[in-house]
Length: 339
Image 1: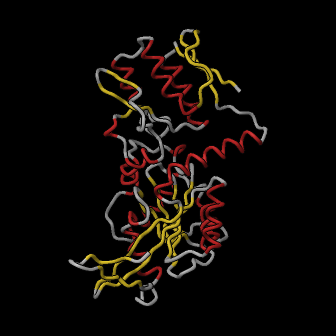
Image 2: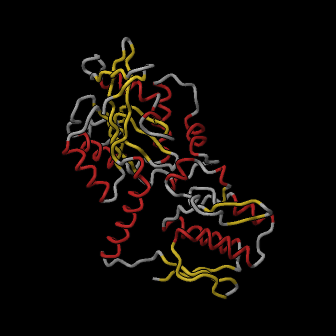
């Protein structure tokens, strides 16, 4: 679609141009600008490395390596041409290479990046502050790897591949970067084309549902259903892992087991990487976007007149850890796997 300037009595078309015509280079110009303005293509993220290439037996380099607010790694691949080449294949290789990046390696890469960009900042403190962590949580870092492809345009082969990859459970975003010229001014139109922003929540739900369906068809044992007991009496039966925090809090409240010390323990528990209890105004945009808290519903827990939402970011490892911690802290509660 064309872009127009609104004049008093007419529309003035802003002419599209190209990076090549404007003599903008891929690495020295586009990558450099996005490195310090990554929010233009990837919200709520922090670049921790540029031209990252600490791979064994490989001379490949990731254009930009970032971390998002959920502590996921993000591989950013840039191209200035009109079809993107084979950038989706390159990005998949890079994502596989960084998938096992540890916290220590990420901090080291970030420290190198800060030195290269002449920023006098402590890498670990900066990364902890960005993630809103009090201390490193190695088990929760880099559990998933996302991919962001940014180019002036994308061929049909790339968009078809990306749609299929997302359907299979990967997280790949395509962002179109289209330069325009308005007199002496050079403008950049940034447009996310996959997934469409207005359909993002729906597509995430469809992706999760397809994952569950594939898991069910695989014949593997489903361990995602639990029951909760209070003093040996059944409180809630056959609920999903995503609801373990909610039913734990409700069971404790119903049985008058929450005093101020217990509330503070629950409030700031981060076993699932997110604060277990948050008020609406404490929930960040990315947390809301990816349904880490169900803010589209009424608050789920009230304590001393304050309303709270309960974190929903539960995988098997942190669910198991949470159960162990809760049963130690509240011996009245016990859990049982059903499946």
